[in-house]
Image (cartoon, rainbow, N blue to C red; front, side, top):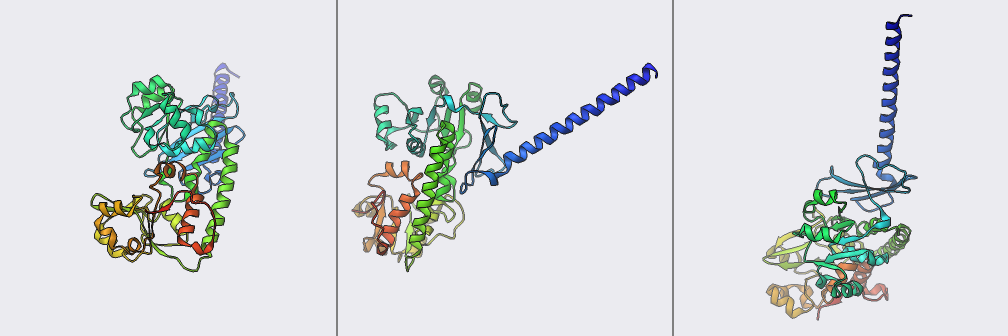
Length: 377
């Protein structure tokens, strides 16, 4: 065999080995990607926008953007330091985690997991219910921000948080790329866009994995699901579904929950006839006062008018007194303690459901405490 033939055979052999290795890697990546994106294995059962998959190598967490479903935020928590970070995922380290949390529901979730010590910055204290966080804000042990928008990047850098949890109401968190280069990871929380109240509460699991308290979070969610569904069954035993209106006047328009929102789902589970249950969307419906009056002037109950007294309600909306629910004194709201409601209702949808059942179906005699709601004064 000539030297030329030997060289050609070696080149062929190298080409074959290279192609084989390429296809082995391609198959491996394809199988890995299939495992990561197989959302049927997610431990979240109700959430549309949070998927969590446990594997031997670690935990894969994907947050799906509600408005841009092709866009996702992918995170990986490894079970050991030797495991490489998968392509397309950002590695998170739960052992050294601390947070800037910029919405009150985030405080409620961390409180449920006994992880308040991980908070180093939060939204303005006047919206906080948790007394421990309020005390730490007063002592300047936690940085306070007015909102999640327009926070000077210099202040964030000086705090050196590992993670910034923001609501995602805006687009991307300001200066995200610069912060990520500095080792600070902004993460959106879309719990407010969920269509099911238990799906909204499942974002507790995300905080559980971030703080190493996932077993505590799983146990809580199992009990919550059981409690909620038992209450739903109880509500279905009521002989009638009262017609209700939910929402309030803001400016010249009426705002209430859209029919595919978690708030509307709770009303449905409470066995009510919510007048806008057929509307599309997971946010709010916006209607003229004339339309709402025509649709719901004879509604038996009015929930969440935005005020804690009839006098304040009528002062803000003079036509409120024309509603049957107003005249029959069947108007209820959480506004006597709004901070408690906004901080805790996301992880306690069973409390919200319990309150509504006791208001709307007193004949069922739940005999539970009133967690959030009171009749207007």
